[in-house]
Structures are given as C-alpha cells and as structure tokens.
Length: 118
Image (cartoon, rainbow, N blue to C red):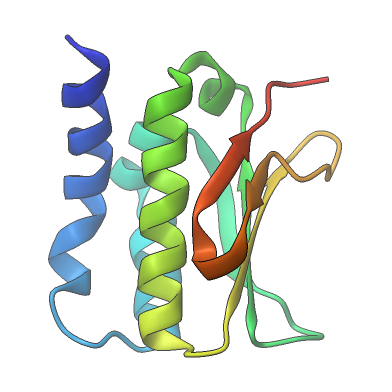
C-alpha cells in the first residue's frame, strides 16, 4: 500500500462526520472513534478542559510507525475540522508517553513539521 493511499484512508476514516459544519464534540468523537483511533495511531482525543479552544490529540507509538506524509495529512485534517467547529481553535498533537508536541503548525495552519519520537 502506498504512502498516499494510506494517508487518504486515514483522512477518509474521519471525513464522513465532517461533511457539514461540525460541533466540537463531533470532531472529538470522530477522532476518538475506535476504528479512526487505530487507523491514525491515536491514544485519545479531547477538548482541553482549561481552554476549550484547544483540541488535544495524544498519539500512541503506532502513530510514529506510520509514514511522515500520513501523519502530516492526518494532522492537517484534524486542524481543518477543528477550525470549522471552533473558528479560533488550536490543535495540539502530543506524544502520549511524553506530552511533547509532535506536530508543528505554521501560519495559516500548514503542517510545518511532524516529529519522530524522542
């Protein structure tokens, strides 16, 4: 299976719930849905209780086993969906084991860097 095909499978696993303007809870539920979590290597997704503009996505070791392009595509889709639900929203993709950020977003939300573990 090619990297591009894997990336599209991850994005398509999340897409059905985001065809309309989603509620923040819809975005969280879609990312946290078991099949989507396994496909993307997500341990858990939740809205930050202290700052509801922030979506926290904690990724498992399986996330790091996926090609960088697949991880970047998933992170871009999460940010796009979250911004549709929360116009001034912020996404933090964190290593579940260390709480370190593993995706760096740039101006306009472009994924600038997808980090490896460590």
